[in-house]
Length: 231
Image 1 (cartoon, rainbow, N blue to C red):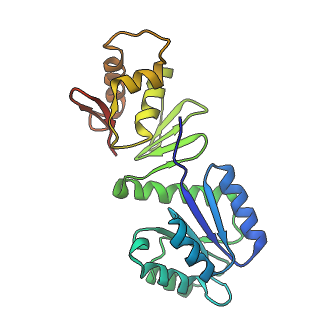
Image 2: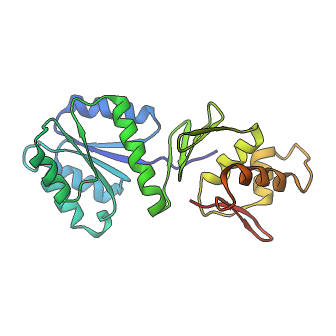
């Protein structure tokens, strides 16, 4: 299944940190761009429109606070997620960061698991507001659901839900693009394959089972066409 990968821009004047963060984020399936200073970061952001910008606070020429302030003044970055990296624990640096529109702070030295956990939490926070779906190679986060395609496991909040293979594949398909109407023919082709002959009611049965487990509001019927996933 082809998926849109979320784009992250890293801005830090320390090459070792850029390389370390880029490696760990790319390993999780994100597209990652880097910039060595705030001015270059703004230029790249204007060209690539990342879903998330991670800014170091302490940088020469233009620090992270000023970079964030300038980005927030541009209409296209009013809603973009911006996270600060900082080695400083002083309250005033965080207050200054939030004052210019930061969404979160991550303290150096950065631990990969902590970084990824915070980033995934941020994406989940914004999903309901912006209809955003976060992807990496093996995990799809859609609304309150986390869909692990390696383990065939769905997590809803803190509850783990194991699904039969076809129910899982059907859910993963429609949740990959919330709001998109998947036709019955497309679902049959993508989930069951053209070489498999199934009855007309097969999709309906699987949809009913998904609704029993996740609620009627999550999977909508579009009469005469197919189904869609709603966040």
